[in-house]
Amino acid sequence: MDIIKIEDLQKLDLRIGKIITCQKVEGSEKLLKLEVDFGIEIGQRQIISGIGKKYTPEFLIGKEAVFILNLEPRMIMGLQSEGMILCADHNGEPYILVPQEEVLPGAKIK
Image (spheres, one colour):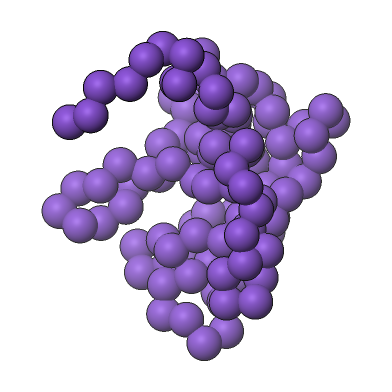
């Protein structure tokens, strides 16, 4: 395990987002294209995630989850991803991190 300084952790912009739409990415077995609401301040962003073997689009729509927003955007199978959903890894499967109670989209994780 690598040790990081608190200043490195503070650089991450972790926020709650609400998944508005979700669909499978054509030509991929595991990629999903998420449209995520991060509230008035940030608006909606497109996130491409490799969680499609564990989760169906129908299951994810309306769910809140934790996202990293200040990653450099990158192209994945021709689609721009503007962040990353955070997941726990258990036995090689992703488990999305969700709040216990409803939280406003865009709320910062501290």
